[in-house]
Image (cartoon, rainbow, N blue to C red; front, top):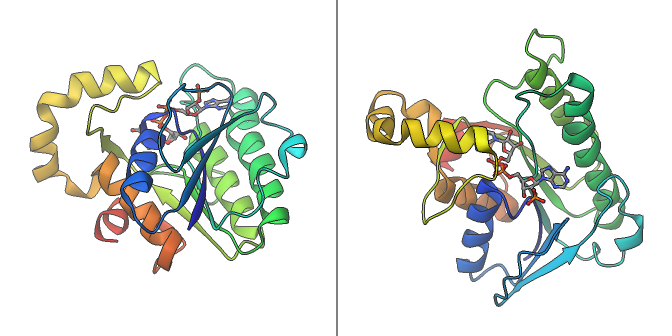
Length: 219
Ligand SMILES: NC(=O)c1ccc[n+]([C@@H]2O[C@H](COP(=O)([O-])OP(=O)(O)OC[C@H]3O[C@@H](n4cnc5c(N)ncnc54)[C@H](OP(=O)(O)O)[C@@H]3O)[C@@H](O)[C@H]2O)c1
């Protein structure tokens, strides 16, 4: 399976790439990123691209993939709705629109978040925008598209979030995580479980198109 990853430098993306590299069924991983990580690993290539609203100059390189694991995203903290939508909806749909045209047999997997608002009308800004993004992705003619909605993600294997707000929250919560795993397992997953579940959905499909934490953990 040939996989294209967006957001590979982020917390979820690093976890996903790790699982791809360990999976013998994955033969090729291409990370599309705005800067190079400088890392050389077998089956892993990077394509540095500056304009994430226009992928037309790199269409040739984005062709021939079986799955897209889309982990790119930002925290809405301190952002206006317009700016948050521009990145969350704008970049995601620009990438997905290009990919579906070039790879109609592709499975597209999007990381949204627990609490995403499919009605697009609720009070919470980020949840409406993620809902709008999910709904638009589900209308595209991919072979399959799955919306993953994680909540608390425990980073394993030395992985760290690029988002300061997430890094601070995880540092504060770390001592409580074992307890949370027991008390609120419905809300907790790990970067490893999430990466493996995304790969499973990409390879063999999933029972639902929208996966909440228990669905992710049991895949
Ligand atoms: N972490 C959590 O606990 C959690 C829980 C639920 C849902 N989520 C969702 O999962 C997604 C990823 O979260 P994360 O924790 O992995 O985030 P992260 O560590 O902050 O990583 C974000 C990734 O997105 C890329 N990115 C951000 N803005 C970009 C832009 N304008 N153009 C190109 N690339 C851009 C970053 O690339 P650069 O290296 O170039 O900055 C990085 O690879 C987000 O949508 C988040 O809402 C996260």
